[in-house]
Length: 265
Image (cartoon, rainbow, N blue to C red; front, top):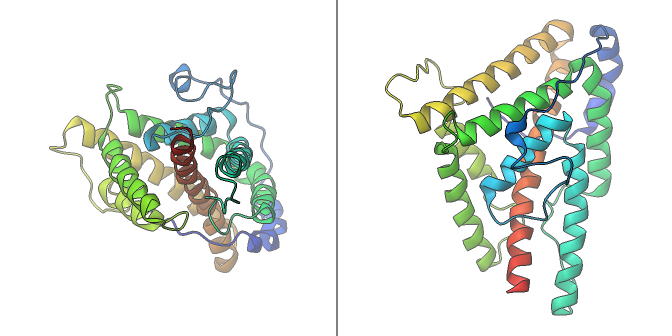
């Protein structure tokens, strides 16, 4: 799966076409499975910015699985970035430039959510988000709940982020490398994956990646069949962009979690 961040503003031009192309449908929300509760409990809400990238992504996965939307996590991240920036200024007496991804202004995130809410009913993005959350959680924890190779990828990226922060790199550094490694290690878009001979930690991660890839491909085939090529490409880029931007925010949570830890210790 080629996950490429695109501007979301073009989506507004094609929403009218989608209203015609897709028939309305009403979906009953599935009850929240208990498996994600250790990582995201809707009764107690989000945890403060965390210092484990694996735990960050498990919380994001649980939130998507429960809410069927990235909006609650986005609102949480906006609040957490403000809170940690205020703590930085209080502790150092200096203004904090922030660790939010550079393009994620309040205006951008407002457009992000407007586009999500417009597209979601017709594309059933709530169902897609829940599936992304469930498969992400399963792909990280594995069938035996002992972890998969995804945790190795997170740990390696986490180490790079910490070294980069010590060296004063800009927010969001190394994210594209992280995406490339996830794609390679979990074998997205690799033809002829059979899982034969894989150990459990690798098989579980790759198998759930294959499920997700199939889910996106099914949705994209429906979009391609309903819209002209240019409009279909815009919508597909937007759908991928929703989840890529959410992953970027997850990385930024880890960054401000480490920053807060350093300020308090």
